[in-house]
Amino acid sequence: MRKPTSKMRLLPLIAATYFMVAGGPYGLEDILGDAGYGRALLLLILIPIVWSLPTALMVGELASALPEEGGYYCWVRRALGPFWGFQEAWLSLAASVFDMAIYPVIFVLYLSRVAPALTAGPRVTLWELAIVLACAAWNLRGARSVGESSIGFFAALLAPFLVLVAVGFWKGLFAPASGLPTFGAHLHRSLALLRAPVAAPSLAGAVSIALWNYMGWDNASTVAQEVESPQRNYPRAMLLSAALVALTYIVPLTAVAISGIPADRFTTGAWTDAARSIAGPGPFGTILALAVVLGGMLNGAGMFNALMLSYARVPYALAQDGLLPRFLARTTAARPNRAPVPWASVLVCAAAWALALGLSFEHLISIDLVLYGASLLLEFVALVVLRLREPALPRPFRIPGGLTAAVLAGVGPALLLAFALVAARSQRVGPLPALLFAALVAALGPLLFRMARLASSRQSPPRLRSPR
Image 1 (cartoon, rainbow, N blue to C red):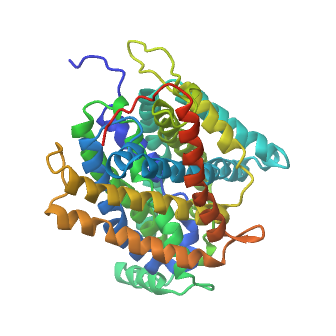
Image 2 (image 1 turned 30 degrees about the vertical axis):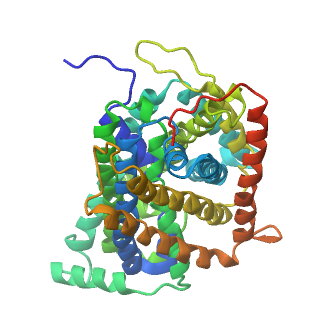
Image 3 (image 1 turned 180 degrees about the horizontal axis):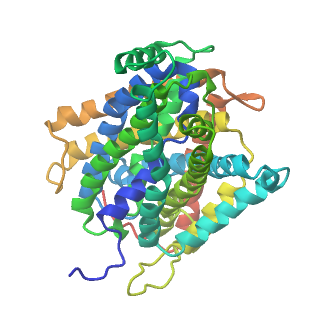
């Protein structure tokens, strides 16, 4: 019998990572409207190979070699020094402000499908704030609690999609229909739908949304000290989560395509209509649609909850190194089955995310991709630099193929990010282009580092946990 532990084990780590990246098929709808079924499915198959797999391998190597609280911040600081470590942290935290504002919006969007009166007018903001507060309270229970709750969220969220997939494949390939008496005829119609064009195609928009739906693999690294056997569990969690995310994206979209629903009918929140259309107008269709709506609410809450766990550890790590006020390094008392929680960092992050709730979905994705993309590229640079400077560093997991493979791992993500940046050039935030706005946010990093070092010099020397 295994001893009780306050740390997160492998299965909760996989579930938490899943919600830090995906949270189910929700959020894929606009890819269909931009690209149609055939191109959307092709993107969802290829992007994991070029983007998710290299990133998961990078995270697996660095998290197993340097399993420290603060994750990617610690990797970059060790490889490139305090300045670039701070930039990595700043880019990630700045991206989080825009990223985290999306998930309460998704929760309210699906809630409005079943209770529009509850989400009318100012009630929208109240619901979004309620999600922020509820997840902050949950996070104060610790990483183990968030990870274990993610398992329940995962099961409840995907259960209606298992039914939707089964019914969609049956209806699309086998169910009797007027003029389609044979399996071959059904299959021919489904293939025709996969090739059908959309009214307003936008490959650039589809790629950007697909990247956003596949990003976030490094987020789980920041809680390494709260994970059981991180050297063993991180590589396993990264690879299993990558396969799981791709599977839960591709299979439901394929089922919807085969069932015969036109791609143009898909916009954000359209999974509810798809469930009702596939299951039919009777009680079964109503129940399945309601289950999908509840899953959409769990998607928003579950992703916010898991990502709060991740992001809140970064200010905590910075405060431990003297680069943010020491107040943010305060934790709850350790208990037999509950590790200390950086409660001050959790609450400050929650307040910052609450202030960004009014931004629109499209603007958030553009800004998020720029800031997150820059931080991700720094992590790939850290991977290569550590291979060169510290070849003897114990690496329980190593990307196979030597230094060349470590360098090539970052090429695919870099090219995709460059494409996404070009695609987002027309987006605007008020009077400014979204890319310029994001660049200005990123440019604050060096100034904030100078201010942090000046403030730190007036205090007692910080505790640097990992010397270069």
